[in-house]
Length: 118
View (cartoon, rainbow, N blue to C red):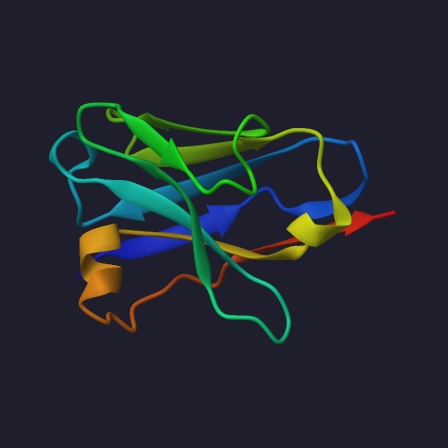
């Protein structure tokens, strides 16, 4: 069973930055894609960034150029560097394995709250 622990969220003013971390176990980063998701109140959870085993990255249009996903394979830790934050980025942020999410997994961490004030 994959275990995921997110951290690093907080309250920040618009234009500020935060760095999220996700400590994972039960999954090998070097051969699996990992993703950051977010869910704002009243909205569906969305995938904002993916990093593949090769290191290739993809981003949702809404965060492209502002967010950077990275990982440390040796530490099994995933990161999300968030810059130029906007109030619309306010959400609960989670990490997970995209192929498991696509299969409908209900195994999620507690998430980390990001709140951006205007």
